[in-house]
Image (cartoon, rainbow, N blue to C red):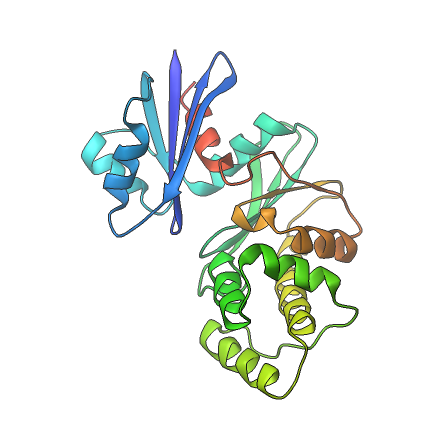
Length: 246
């Protein structure tokens, strides 16, 4: 049997196919204005027997494919165990929200906290801030890591923070120091979320923001704990959705 999982996120749609307990196929694409069409494009020519959906658009997919759905929380709890059986806590920073999840010894979700009221501290927030500073996302992370000090960012509202960043640079603030300040502000929010729920030990870091090396470095320093980043941190939810049906 080949089990497929679709994670329809706010920024990307991910497909994973599991066969014999191994990842047989993974694909991802920008969500676009038509997530259903994006999902269908990812599934084209992919061989699988069943599909389970998760993410923001799971009910849209369910309505058209008549497939089962699971919550993002469960999907990440299951997907994280595919990569690591040691991590008892998960930090997922995606395009529009941040989730902190704790697991029991069997890998079942025991508690979670979620910041989904606005895009502050998420992947979208980082994209907007990088653009305001004239960086690509890769340059943004590298610039922040190169700074010896951080410029404090007072607002975490995306609109106000963008105005603040533009104002700071027009006043002569170094772009890399502003970049570090932005990363530190996001780390502070993420750590506060984690500390509400997580047991000790390594933290599983998932979502597109886990690809940001500066975020990983700062989080490990602030937490005093190791962060485990899977080879593709964006595919974790899709893998969890696939495995939930095995």
